[in-house]
Amino acid sequence: MGNRFQVSDRFAAGAQYIGGRLRAGTSGQEHSVIDPATGESVYTYALASTADVDEAVAAAKAAFPGWAGATPGERSDALHRFAGVLAEWADDIARVESLQCGKPLKLTTEFDVPGTIDNTAFFAGAARHLQGQSAAEYSGDHTSYIRREPIGVIGSIAPWNYPLQMAAWKILPAVAAGNTIVLKPAELTPLTSLMFAQAAKEAGIPDGVINVVSGAGRTVGEHLVGHPDVVMTSFTGSTPVGKRVAEIATATVKRLHLELGGKAPFVVFDDADLEAAAQGAVAASLINSGQDCTAATRAYVQRPLFEAFVARVAELMETVRVGDPFDPTTDLGPLISHRHRDSVAGFVERARAYATVVTGGEAPGGDLKDGAYYRPTLITGAAQDSEVVQSEIFGPVLVALPFDTDDEGIRLANDTPYGLAASAWSRDVYRANRATRDIKAGCVWVNDHIPIISEMPHGGTKASGYGKDMSAYSFEEYTQVKHVMFDNTAVAAKDWHRTIFGDR
Image (cartoon, rainbow, N blue to C red):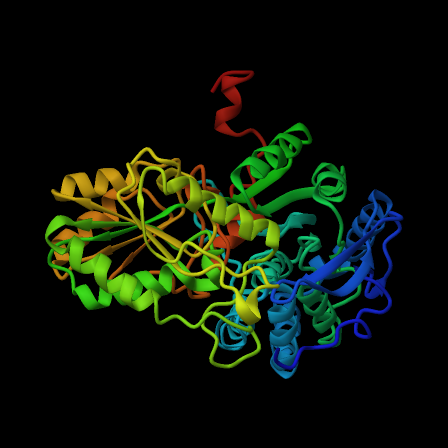
């Protein structure tokens, strides 16, 4: 196995980052970060307790007045420095991300880390542009304008599939808008979230603005969401857990942002560039070993192209190099854990009873036998209402189904509880434009699938949740819109008073 980053010394003080310093959790329970490529423990830490959450929230609450009172320019400058520190630490962060997640190093060095640096730089600029509606005399007698104000302490929960990027997506818009935050990363993958918080301190962001508590969801996570001093929760994860988060947040009348599961359709019309669609389907279904809520999972291909598409995708999948994440030639690393690998394999094994596994459908042996690996898998012949078509598998599995008419293709694409992302493949601008209108998803790509950019929002509809990460649209989640209205008449007895007392 390739050169791995030694994390035990880096986090010797513990996996909780509260008030600007690392410390150990006080739950009395330990948890190990496992390298999914080897099955070996790389770091063991004490989990956070609810008391640690209370301390982190108190630190964020104490830091809020000063950070909220900083000028947009001051927050912007700090975030620009933050982006600079992340760039300096880029190699170490990429190696830690690959170690705890099993991501190929080329993915972390070319996607996760540079994307996070770019996101930080974007919010450094966006911090200066918290704008409201222009001032005007809408009533004729008053001047109205809008203030956008930070709302307070944010309590956010991030998933294990993109620990670094999800930490950034939660933290950056919140702090750019003047809030403070307590982030709970997944206990499987806390390390790069902690590095992100450390980089913020190195950049001069005040202690307490960014805090990280590493603990179990059912105790620490639920306590954070229900905490009386937390005014908003942003959660990314599965739809069932998102429902539980919503229940807790509703009970305490919190603002809530949910980015949940997905089952993205990949709709290929019969005039599409077949090679582009096949290449795109392999990349979009296998990114991060398929552990991506926007990954292509359901390829609907118009019947004239269906057989050629299946053949070409299978051919390309068989060239994908499964291996050690630290080998620069590796294309596909392991899944996050053996337990999750077995869950993915279970979907495929059950599908053999009603569908055809064209390629893949197994864990590799040999030098990879100890890791949580699973080969790229293509399935055909499944019914629309089958498990592999309707349920989120979250692994390197693509299901291909044919359709006949455009109406049918769009209907099938929408026939799922989810609505996070989709793509349409066509050379016909009218056909593609119709697909972007009629497919119900938060993002619809045309002739591509997966790219994200800091300037544009990410978020879904239906069972995929609501609210936006990234872009200036995310400020809708993290700011309070306040209407301010000035009387311009200097008249004591105003005409409208007669509706309450007296005569004109």
